[in-house]
Image (cartoon, rainbow, N blue to C red):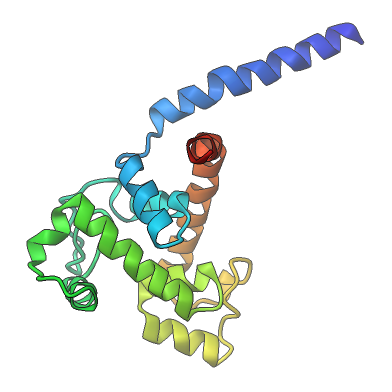
Length: 185
């Protein structure tokens, strides 16, 4: 019995002191301080923001999608222009390649969607597919806006997107939640 307890303690210590730091080394969150600051400013979970950035651009500020979305959070230029107008700022499409601007605009837009939709997952679906179509899915009872029922989403890309963002967010919560809570206190 003592031997089993000793083995369990060793395994626990390995997980806490070896595995987690090793995983953090191989799965860092670039721009973490900026993500935390902006996420907290807009009351959006910074680890959700980090997961979204990982899925959208893999932390490449120069990323441009085939559809024209730009930067870390893959913001469409029209959306960037709208966010700039809302905040009474000048806008140049190249601004979206600047991490500070891109994260601020992306989180602002995500926070707006989170206020507009009944669930975080519906807001994420709208971030990916567009708010008009997601409103139709929810309003017409095609999808109940939950992660569990994502199979009802008509767009395969959006179903896959939700799954990737959710997995990455949970993974980041496992790796970084304690450090972020420690920083706040």
